[in-house]
Image 1: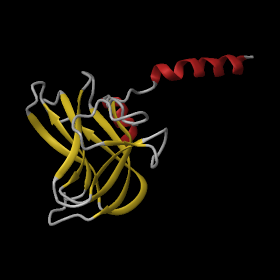
Image 2: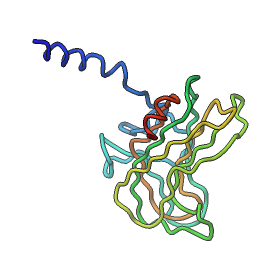
Image 3: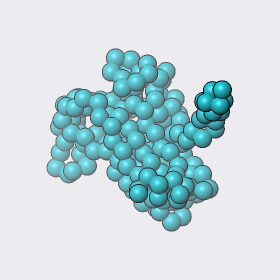
Length: 178
């Protein structure tokens, strides 16, 4: 009986401790809502999980084709764990290393002044779904972050799914790092 009560307590309390994704519609299960820009298309064919993914493609040319989303950073945040699943097809690259399929984060002040940039993923060629993960300690004065998904001046096709940003306290960060 005690083990049944402990099990039920665990099931009930798990959602209370679940960490919230700071990115809205990072799973692209119905459309591209919450992402700014028109480069991202909803794709039902290639998906890592759920019913869809976000897709950006460019057949010719070397323009920046991307979308972004701005998120607020909770007050007690020490670091943020970013994860994304990416699949790519024929991303050619270019002269610069950043000419690739990318997920980049820009940390900003409360009024949108840039503080720093962090590269979470940089993809070239054709690759099956792969998870990219990076934990970033917040830079001083950062109150928001802008998540950018793009083809950075290169032809190809890139798919994004399960884009997440989870706030970590200093204790949670130290637990992960040790």
